[in-house]
Amino acid sequence: MKLEEQLELSAFQSAILEAVATGSDFTAVSDRICRGAEMLAQGTYCTIVSVDEAGLLHPVSAPSLPDSYSQALEGLPIGPDTGSCGTAAYLGEPVHTEDIATDPKWADYRGLALPLGLRACWSTPIKSRDGRPVATFAFYFREKRSSTEMERELVARCAHLCTIAYEHTEMTARNHFLAYRDQLTGLGNRRSFEAAFNAPALFHDSFGLLMLDIDNLKIVNDSLGHEAGDQLISAVARRLKKMFGPDHAFRLGGDEFAIIRHGCGDHETLEETARALLDLVMAPIVQKGATINPSVTLGGVINGADGSSPEQLRQNADLTLYHAKETRRGGYMRFDPGHKTSIVRRIDQSRQLAEALNEDRVLAHFQPVVSLETGRITGVEALARIRQPDGRIAEAGEFLMAFADPRNAARLTDRMIDLTTRDFRGWLDEGLPIEHMALNLTTADFRATDLDVRLGDAFGKAGIPLKHLHLEVTETVMMENRLVRQMSDLRERGVRLALDDFGTGFASLTHLLSFPVDIIKIDKTFVTRLLSDRPSAAIVQALIDIARKIGIDIVAEGVEETEQAERLATLGCHYAQGYLFSRPADAATIARLLRSTLPTGRIDPPEETGLEDKRA
Image (cartoon, rainbow, N blue to C red; front, top):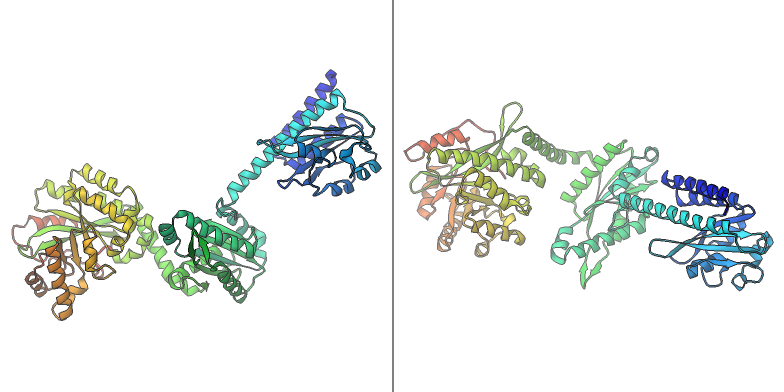
């Protein structure tokens, strides 16, 4: 091959590689390859034809041949006698046809090629990384002949360039899929939804937005396994795709989906859509022999009526779904401005708590636990407080809704651990007579796998043995079997567990045999009615008797009257806490009380708002 031809080939190759590097797709690069090859090999016609996974041909570029030729090739199946290109793709090797008029591979296609003056063809397969033919590159000639050395070199380079272009396009498509498609369902993901939803053109048209949440997905995961949960998500996604198509339904993550309903301009139409969707989605699913009855909750908004910007409409859609999950699970709810009140309050409380944590305005107050036999303080319960920007101290009841966010709950627990270990260490260093300190924990705290590490590190750093720590949990936490093991592990390290607000939830006396409980705290509702309600007194008496026999301590909460304390002592209750002895107070006030050598009497630290004296 002449030097001039080599230089031309090198320049051609560089130009194609630059096109690939700058982002041109396979179709655009194929067209440049064909046109460039035809210029380098005068008198030839170049084509590139792709092969799909079903083995069907699809012309990509044939710049010098009429459209009718490409149309005739569209959808042809590859095979041993499908012209040069179809045969090359079928065999996975080059096919040389020096005479189309006599070659049996062209028997069914001569009438297509010969009228165009095509007499010979050389086709080479283009293969993917796994060796599968994905396209063919072909030269057609106007005379019966074989290829020249220069043409063979050109074909080799063109085939290589086609492979590079194809792989680059595939990689780009794969990256786009990973970036914009949910891997489990194939639906658009959150990024895809945001791109579609924030497109300016969308808000010039009428549309509705439906937010969907799969109900009880956690129960399916816990009872049947995460594979069953994934199958449920996939089944819901398939039904959404069937009803709305793949480009209008999105999986935002977890159990949440979004649907953009184009052409929907009123709530009545959107509700009809929602009802049809509920009927479709809730058809039973059989998974590993178990029948799952899907349940979903929907919230819907209309562009214009419920918001005129992406931010406003999305916020109202989220609020509506949130409210629907609380009040109409398994159904559909349309946006109503009145729904904002409770939801906004919860969001506001979460924001206030987050700000207080960020600005170091979370305080630890303590309420003494008193021995009814001696009148002395045996321990304290730590209670979270927030110093508001105006200086007012807010009790936990004012930001109780913020604990629904597990991140807030975990951050608050960490802050309380830091504050209380510092204060308790100070009391011990002063030699004050205190035996234990109780912290309130939530389900979110136990679901965090590092709770034992966090507690061990904090108390170890403060030099406080874990035998001084009591953890108070509600019956709801105790009812989660998978959390019981964590509680048992903590008990083995010396921590004592207290079942808080006993009698207000779902636990029964029989659960005490299986729960890892050291202490039961009788709820204030029983104590309040102790003197006036015989059934309440009987329940308290029975609980005290049973607890004593199985080695569980009893603490009565909410004791506000001397008569209540005396009656509890008579019934055999040894410990109590409440306003009769002390309101929750800061560490300095508790220290002053502990220094007293006299039996504990009531103290009155600065008044706090409300009557709630618990974190949760």
